[in-house]
Length: 564
Image (cartoon, rainbow, N blue to C red; front, side, top):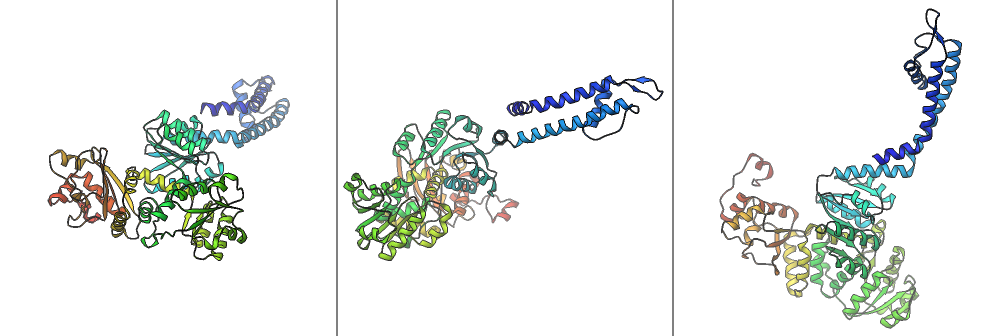
């Protein structure tokens, strides 16, 4: 605020000088010009009465001549002062409005207001750097979990769009360069309620700067970054970034699983992505050649994965060089023309990938290819959210939206960090075990969204801590019962138990639990919410283990018998 006041006074230095000068001369004139009192004797105003008269005269209020009627000389001076003070006020007010409308001053004012809002936050929040497609989806996902967000973006139109969003939790935004540490500081990097920093801009250098500053200042705070460059990814991991998401590499691995390990692909799809694919959609891999249109970052990531799996590919790109020609068969072109696709052998291919950076070209590639070969498997890249309706109507087998891919991965990690470790362990399962796991999850949730939650047995689980420390045995079976009726099982499943460096995937219900164990559950959100009672309420846990009825209060009748 001191800076704001300094800038305001500096910008208004001349108008204020003119206004003060006009008032000073006007007051001095009334003091020096003689008048007559009610007895006809010479009388002069003192400075107080002169200032009083000039004040209400200059503001055009006009109480009249005081304390005695003016002489002709005083009235002449009054006329001069009226015009002088009105002009001075118009000049000063105009200058004031000009300063307030100045973009630089407005930015400084909004920055100070933003900093005040951030300092007043007393609830957990995440600092989001970048409010594009990914940032918007992450903020929405965090809001659904009841977690606030603070946003920084260098594009003013995105900050304006943020203010128009109808979030149930207040989301404050700042238009600034997130790579500057002072801006991160303004956005709450030092606020003890800040849970972590998410670097989600479309500039790898900015994301790297944000991550470095965050880890150097607060090493234990969660830092998640987007990256589209292998060098940047390696650099981010080198100083302890908790999660680095490369959308092209992630989707390439996702598509590779769909082609060669369809059951494992469903495990990843169901646990990470909000709208999971049905079991019936399991991709049936066909051996044969694929056509890849577009050899940018997305295309290179897919090509690398497909070559590693031994899949033959033909690359279609406007810029074919000798290096590309040596790696795979190639055709120069975009792929929107039938002649180019015919040259690439579309009639004998089993699938086509439209992976250019232009949505119109990608749509055209798929539609043209289907006319030439209706049996093709189709994969298409969606670059703009505004085209979502069109891509839904396209009915492609796989749609890759980089922003949504990143957001889903990040939200899954923030919600349950243990999930990433489970997925690593699940990749070691054979297809038969993976199929059994996905069918068990399907029997529990059906078409509902799969949710996950993790617990570390200790201070955060007081009921379990008290039970184990009392010397009593606790098994997973007890934690899968309904707190309202122990004869009913919750629709949730234990996916993983981690004890030190040891992992148990799909642990048995008779697994005995110890302090420090980390447990990952999946199931319906409502059932997982009920399960928390077992970890937090000792009487409820005692009920599901022993059958001893817990005490019910008046409020339990309003919550369908859920125990206190």
